[in-house]
Length: 574
Image (cartoon, rainbow, N blue to C red):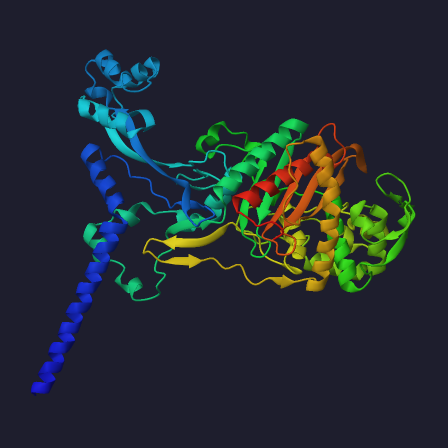
């Protein structure tokens, strides 16, 4: 009997301890994690309570040392409104308000005259000092309400990747583009979720707390974008576009082994803090939504496919005739000249179209199509950004040799920049492709963090193939680098081995064929070549006055390469 009594006492004590621990945990959650939000709510009730405070999760950039920097967050200030019926002396009220903030007289007096409307907004997003000063005046009829709104501290920095928040087709603010849209269910906060009854916050969610540790979807998004690197890329893209009068320039800096995007963007762009004034044409993200024929940088993939399949070897030679005539069409080198019998590396070094076509012919249609498909060309990459489109490689569904020959040097097939860098990065990652991505983790409100998984690398080429082509690309880079240094003495030769290739493509004429004097330039490279940590893809569309990419993008590539080497302190020869 006594033993049974002691057992009951222990069970009751255990329940009491469990409940106590649960209450402590919930109080911590409410008072510490959400303490600032409740403080804002209390302040709002003290000042004015006619509107619900806006709430949304934060998007973070990540500095190279792991420090998180707010890229999209919330600002707190005030809305200033009036109740016209309570305004007895409009001129006195106007004088008082205009002494604290810019206020258009016509706007104020028009609002003050609407005696049948109890609520007329004069200003949104008023700073805290100004709002508090106006509130301290205690002017009858003047309403000072706490307000929160979305801000982007970096302005246009990575704007197309971040996206923006807006009303869209509904009456609720939500992500309309970029990461804001892709991760909207994580970032979004329901109005009643935070400001429910205090005790409901303490006792609520018991069932979910006893279930999965991941008991809420609300959280913040951590990205791999490094803000200092992003700023440098943005500056370089703007400089290239302005210098050469291009319609658009873009770039991606990625870790080729993990797919983490360190920086990405295009120019022109926009400021997400002022979307209303932005050109709608620039609100999308060209990196995932625009397709281009990239030209000669594709030759590095053709070389890899040829070597990997056994169709060619790095050490063999071929007879370059200058032009060939598949299916009655004419395919020529850029200068129409024949080179005769030359080593395979010259296809990359001199960027020979006929040489790329030779590899395609040796492979055969099925093999070439197989490698392009395995590299993900013509497919979405799965990047965590909305609106991604798949490239167009439908020409490889035909039996015409000319389509395979031109595809071998990057014409006749069109892909997105993110598609291109995923495929090209195979040679920088021992022959395997990875999923490019921006988000790396979700930080939940209960203090837990979940790393985002993007699957395992997919092996396309043998590591020996990747090593052989990398060696070729290291040999190719110095001539372009020296040309750029001659044009700009401020440039320095990188202190680590760099594998790189330029690309110049003709642009399709909607009336048929290609323009003969309008080009798309690209530049691709990775380093340190023997253990790549960075892969860079640059492009500029329709530059004026320069025919080849070596003239427009080599200097920019070298600038970014040297910046990354110095910023990340890569040792010489690493």
